[in-house]
Amino acid sequence: MKVIERGNSIIIQNPENFDLSQTFDCGQCFRWEIVDNKYYGIAYGKKLCVWQKDNEIIFENITIEEFHNLWENYFDLNTDYSKIGNELSKIDPLVHKAYNSYPGIRILNQEPWETLCSFIISQNNNIPRIKKIISRLCKSFGEKIEEAESDFTFPTASVLSTLVENDLEPIKCGFRAKYILDAARKVSKGEINLNFISTLFTDEAENELVKINGVGPKIATCTLLYGFHRLEAFPLDVWTKRIMSTFFPGKSPTIFGKYAGIAQQYLYHYIRMHSEELFKSN
Image 1 (cartoon, one colour):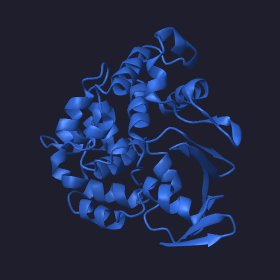
Image 2 (cartoon, helix red, strand yellow):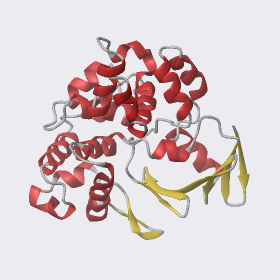
Image 3 (cartoon, helix red, strand yellow):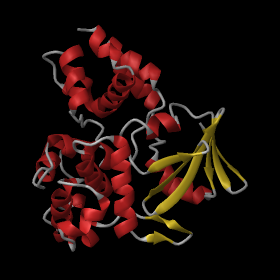
């Protein structure tokens, strides 16, 4: 792919294995919204408008320095997903089919705290409702971005740690409130040190995260995959458990090797979009 400047925008020409809708709609993130075929989102305190047309992806109103300093890494543009997808495709025909159906998925480099909190909110929930809860959380407790009064950053752990459950009633997160607050308090006090977790082996990092009330292996591995970019982490939720038991009986996610998390994303999104495959195999 080629990166060029055009006016106030940065353009990726002929993007390889990078599709915005596949990346944003595969269940890994919750703060991107599409309006008139353009995606708007906030990450690391910065707002971005990005859209795709023909053989170009357009990043509006940013400099080349901003692109390289933030968004290039956020969208994981230095990882060769073509090579990884082809390697994973050799493992099983279903992975091959899933990768060929959604080759534009990339694993975003999201903020660890935001990812942890978001997936605590995601438990026993659906994506539209998760997005609404997170939006209300940000508007209630995040910081306003100067250029747009309606846009807010994701609230920090230190801000949320000072709250009580009643304070979270307006965001309508239900039973998850006590888990959000426990996570915020432990992170803000350093009992759960996200910087330290980033230095640990994946199993050790998971053991640290599950010390938070309401955080089990699924939320921990989601946090590691999407917030710490541990590409070997394989979250097991209802969908992926069905996938493993139906198509890979008696096997563990370790069969996918160091890119198990990417394999999981291809399989998860493919089966979610083609659930008839589950019944066809039975």
